[in-house]
Image (cartoon, rainbow, N blue to C red; front, side):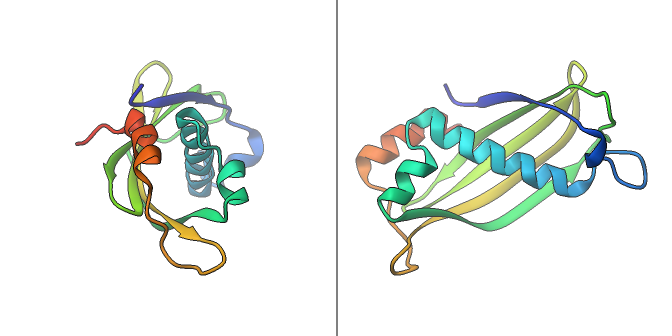
Length: 137
């Protein structure tokens, strides 16, 4: 599987004063991507939270390459580039209109135990599931 890919809509309310997609929307799209990745590996966030396990973000980085405008078609890709004991680095690409790279980014996420707030080490059986989306760079 490696990459999880999905299409995104651009709505008029997402356009900023300059006339292109607002920077904050990329962060929203990254959230959508993380949820889709967890679903794709078989560990949806709803099931994790029932076990008192919560994904939290440590870092977000976005590099903007080409602006996205209302009417553009956008394809997102997400994958895991590094899987640690309790954290992972997820990489993103946002591609518009048949192959134009609009932005790249990455986020470092950490799992915590909700009741303690301490890092939750990923068990081996779950690591195997996350490895479906592991594409080390």
